[in-house]
Length: 171
Image 1 (tube, helix red, strand yellow):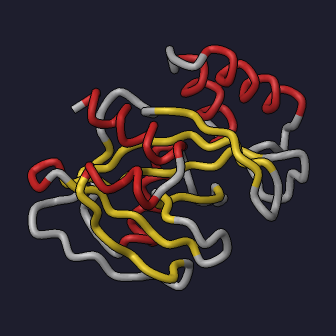
Image 2 (image 1 turned 135 degrees about the horizontal axis):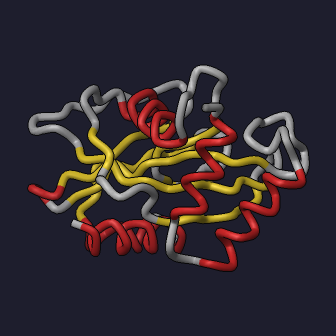
């Protein structure tokens, strides 16, 4: 199965945000290249909120280009077999934490936002950090920091706050 086919199946089985979910499916139907950064009309991306429920905190990255505190994530790559794989890969690369485990049940949320390259149709997961996880900043970040749940709204935009709320509801 291709990454494109996996994305369609994931989105068809996602039960929330019906209007946005359908917009993602319509986009993929209209754009066979809709998984890739080269699709100028927008493309599917995958992200994961790295969470440490034991300590009530999340790991956010100060994105180098966007200069906002965000969850880890980005573009799909040809080696990604599934959207979940892409989200876990991005979270691992950007956090430096090995052994991240995605919460079961598929994506936590969808979020469409404009970026310097195009519209991102982001499929958002949540990843549990293993005990004793030590983060390491990547080339894509200006900073990387753990934030208590209560402080996320003070540093991040509403999309990250909604992702945290949806993640906590699923724990």
